[in-house]
Structure formats: C-alpha cells, structure tokens
Image (cartoon, rainbow, N blue to C red; front, side, top):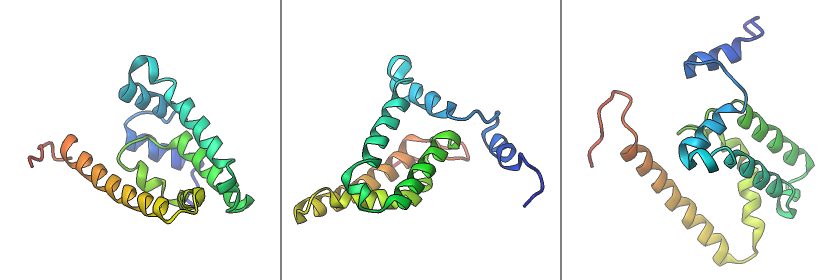
Length: 143
C-alpha cells in the first residue's frame, strides 16, 4: 500500500546492507556452513528433500490447497529469505508440514519421541544462538 512497486525489495536490501539477489543467500550460507565443495550443493539437496516430503503420502493428507500453499511459501522463503536465526520463526507458517510428520507413524512411541526431540532441539537452538553468536551490542555472553 506504499505506492512504491519495489518497496519490499528495497526494504530487504536495506536490512541486508546489499542488493537483494533471489536464492543467492542460500548458496552463500551453504558455503559458509559446509565449505566450498558441499556448500553450493546444499541448497539443491534441501530443495530435493523438500519436494520429496511435499509429495509424500502424509503431506497429501493435508489437502491439495495446503500442499500448494506450503510449497509456494517454501519457494518464497527460498527466494527471498536470508538464512539466519529468524529462519525458524519465518518457517512457522509451514506448521501443516510438521503436523503431517506426526502421521509418519501410528505409534505413540514415535509421536512422543518426536515431541521430546523437538523440545530438545529447541533447547539446542537457543543455546547455540546465545553461546556461539555475539550479542548485537558487540559483547560476548559468557555462561
């Protein structure tokens, strides 16, 4: 509603401190995390795994509209999101895919294990965020 056709991309570019080039941040982050050999391959592996999951029987149960919406939103994230600590927050609208994962098995043990693992992974993520990344003020947090 700003009346400026490129308002979104201009705002994103200002936040990043560089021009917005679709898909490029995933390749940059891949190289940072996995090195110069595996880094450029990582986004392709992510896309293939995502496509396989989106077409799985469990995800088909959520309905075609939800499948398409999740696929479109995932494509949007792939095109414009700079992978960082906000990535998990930005993935929250993809919760139907997480709910579909609960249908991978009818076993109560599987579902409880999945719940416990997600809680533990949340703790790991918070510790990783606080310990291994400097605070925005420039100081380091010491446990």
